[in-house]
Length: 309
Image 1 (cartoon, one colour):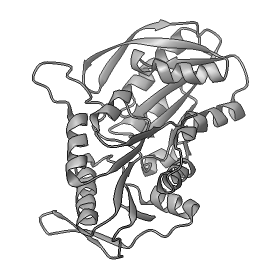
Image 2 (tube, helix red, strand yellow):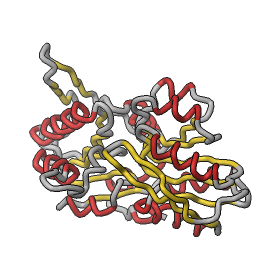
Image 3 (spheres, rainbow, N blue to C red):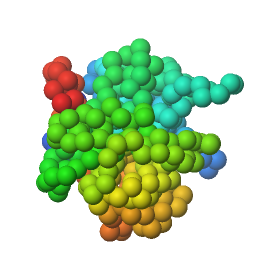
Image 4 (cartoon, helix red, strand yellow):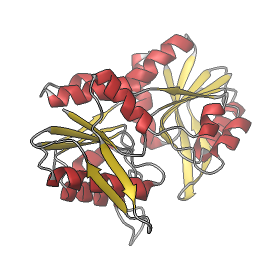
């Protein structure tokens, strides 16, 4: 198998390659003076099983375009099969029409990837599970829950309530709570506009509990911090959060530092900013072993479903 990395998260790609005991393919990704992206695959990949690792995180448009061009370069180099490994699938929050005359950008991105020549998709914790149905190619959506559960068992022993910051995240919170035989609570959230939310109510008992917020994306941290404040007012003893994709846009780190949250765990699906690395509240868990195992299983035509548990 051939592993190729874009510029979105080279450290994660290197870790995946090291665990898989495979060298990254020599690839030149550069730009013209007007910022056009240019790609050259410098190793022979004719007939090979190619995996392109690229999160479509900030800058989302640049990283997405870079991925599409790398796919096209591999297709024209006669790659046998092209798998797009996208740990963080950008535009996933635009999975439906919330209002008239609005796009479904998650579907548009799926169409673009298929049109470019992607034969298979490997991603992690999609914002909405139905996005898998936007693709007409095999799509594997891995879960960070097993990684989180191991850390939770290590650091939190009893009196835990898992909190979903909105109704959409209740499935993931319930799954983890069921495995750890704990209670759950749900935040009744209202979103006035994209990126801004307000917690209206807390459904469930959080008083004197260690509350662990479970979510897939930490963007501006508005939802997370509002949820933490709300459950703190309801008498929560300690508050932690386990988030798959740490976007950390805008003043997210500053909001987190002022919030009642004591500990936040994110994965390295998106390469953490220096300010996130320096934060005493933020801890990073690697998904490289999980993705490496999935890649090896796909390449050897073995089942990937065992990794979903």
